[in-house]
Each structure stands twice: as structure tokens, then as C-alpha cells.
Image 1: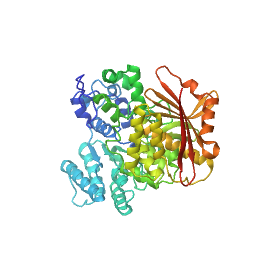
Image 2 (image 1 turned 90 degrees about the vertical axis):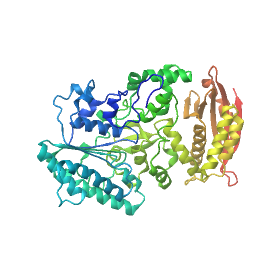
Image 3 (image 1 turned 45 degrees about the vertical axis):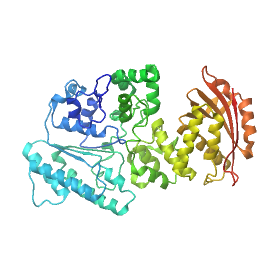
Image 4 (image 1 turned 180 degrees about the vertical axis):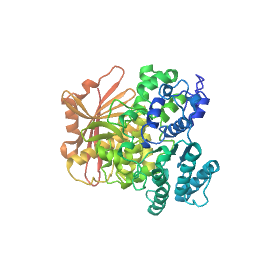
Length: 526
């Protein structure tokens, strides 16, 4: 992807390390970590969300194992590697395989290509036996251990998870293909697998062990993704041009990029956060901050998982998971939190003894999740929700807070009852719907904002507008109680900002059958 103004070639769109280097693309150098990974364990599994550079990493490992030293000139790996051994490399890519037949066909073609180089034993019929003979022949011919790289190993399994018969057929293919890597491990330097999700019933992770699943190792936390310092060091010309287009300073531009694309953590080291590389580089190349990762095609499992989950889906902003489950558990068991973490919709927000707090990493992901969750949670058609949110957004752009609330009232009406009837569940549910709607309108929304006199339920910011929002159920005083609390606790005093319009917004909700939504509101401009 070429940056039209600077003339620099950006790296997004390149999945081949050799092609990237030949085209002199801007490259964030992580080859020191690549060397550490390649020379650490024999069996390695690295999980990262889609579009996070896994294929480029696999290609980089392939070039390293093949001894293509010239491609690495000037990079950090040159300080680590002194021998540059050229090994046989077997590379497989399971992406775009959906059925067992797809996978068998791809394996047949790929194995045939390698058999043309290293020879074929006619007695070896199935993929596992053919791979076993390749490992043996490659070693006997070269005298050097080979490397096997499998990119997107889990793609077929994800897409068949809710088709039990097809999923079982795929599992049998995996259970046949991977055992040779254990049986003939003495011929193998490295088996490296990438994917988003972990499935444990394949006979695959019996090859591995806990020490070889490096997904949550702090030393590899930034291997895929771009850190803030890497952004500044490698992309300053593009940052400045984006800022010039938008009328932002460099600091403001970096902050906008951070809010939209940063916040992913894959280990207990909370200082090691990364930006989504696909979205970040697209934004810098196109000079536009928008949803690139989501629009590039989400996991087909996401919507199905969210619908089937028994979890309280409104609590995805902050949920806990144990260390053992995060590192070792099988996403196929249907744990929505684990699935959302492994696929990039949740990330580590806090590490505590024995576990983690997960939350949504950034604005891009939050918008994607809310767009799916809101219609499901409200039991309303997507088109109705989309059009009503659009009308709310139009009113907000005009500074018409009352018009926005009228559309919100229409949106949040006749919503389903929560599964539990305690009052605080009703309050949390209404707060969730309001915050979702405001967020999809383009607002930045903060919950339970602490003030010297108490906590504001919600603070929503949109361009030159700031809203302090207090929510009350009718049976807890309704609009009048919300107005009184806003006034007596002077919540808006800390929000006054030169050039900003500040509003105190009181909203009441009714749980009565004929309403089940917004029953009233009051707006006061400060």
C-alpha cells in the first residue's frame, strides 16, 4: 500500500516478508523476537486475532529457516544469528478451508509439491503418513532438521464449530496429520502454528505442552501488533500528514489513533500494549480514521457465539477469567469470554493474582460489538436499530439534544425484561442501552465517573458537546430525582470547558409493561 503523498511504501497488504523487503516497505523491525521464537522450543503455538500479522510472521520465519540472510540486512536479527543455516521448510496455510474436503484437497496439493522435491513413497496414502515420509526424506537428503509452519491452523475448525458432523470430520483430518511431528521429532527443528483460537481435541496439543504455547508470554507480547513507540519511530511522516488533513497536532493525532486502534494486551505485563497493525497502517495510508479491521470481515463465529451465550452480554466491558482458562482452555467448549479474547474482541485490562480482568480494547472493537449486541439484546430488527441510531446521530450533530433523546426514547421501548428482577439489574440494563446508543452515535462514554460529590452515571462527549447524564427508575424518583441529584451534587461543575457546550441530562425509565423504556427526560444547558 503506497502512501501517495510521502511516496513511502507501507507494509499493510503484504503477507510475504520477501516481497515486503524487495519493495522496500516501511517495516517495524521485530526480527530479534523472531530469532528468539525460532530458537526457543521445538513445538510452538502462537494465538493472535485475525489481521494481526500472523501470516507475515510465518513468512518471516520461513525466510529465516531457509537462510535468506540478504533479506535481513540492517535488521536486529543480524546481531543474534551467526550461522544462517538453510533448512528444508514445509509451509501450510489452512485459511479459506471450510470443510474437511477443502482441507484434504489443500493438503494433497501441498504435500504433492514437497514430494516432487524430496520423493514420494507410494505406500504412504493419507496426509499423516505422507508427512512422516517427507520429514524423514528431507533429513536424509540434507542432513539438517527441517521446519514446518502452519498458518491459520484453526480456520476450518472455527467455521465448522456449529456443524457437529463436519467438525468431527475435520478433527479426524487433524488427528491424522499432526502425530508424525511427534513421532519423527528428531528430524524436526521447529513446528510453528498460528491461529486465533485453540482447540484441544486434535491430537495436536498433546505434541505441545504448556511451555510451548507462547501466546501469553510477556517476551512475545508485542511480537504481533505495533507499540506506541514503534508508531512514533516508524510512521511520523504519515502521522503528521493525517494531522494536517484533520487539523490536529501530532499529539492529538496520536491520541485519536490510540483511542481507535490501541489497547491490545496479550500477557500479564500491562505496559506491553499494541495497536491493531492492519487498522493502524490503513488509517495512516488513507489519512482516515475509521473501522478497517471490522469491515475487512469478522469471524463468522462471533454473532453465533453471542447469540448462544448464556453470559450477561452487557458486562463485556469488565469480566474476569482465570489464568489457566486464558492460557490453556479450549474455545470449542463455548466460553464466550475466552472466544472474544482469542479473536480480539476483548483484551487484558488488569492482571491480578490467579487471573485477569478482560475488557473491550478500543473504539473500533466496541462499535463492532455494540452493533451486534444492541439489536439482539433489544429483540429488535437490525434495520430499525440502525435507522434510529442514524436519526440520533443526525440530531446530535445539530446540537439538538432533545431530538436525540426523542429518538432514544423510540429505540429504548418495549425492551425484554432482564432474566433477574432485582432493581439494580433493571438500572444496569437501561444504563447499558443508553451507553450503547450514545457510543454508536459517535460519543465517547464513561461510566460511573467519580466527582468530589459522588458519581455521575454517564458522561458522554461528542465534539463540542459534553453531557452529564443521571438515570433513575420511575419507582426511584424518576426524572425529578435525577434532576435534583444533578443540581444538588453540582455534577456539571467539573465538566465546564471553554468552547464546549455542557448539558445536564436527567432520564427516567419505567419497567411497566406498556413502556419498558424511557418514560421521561429533562435537558438543561449549563
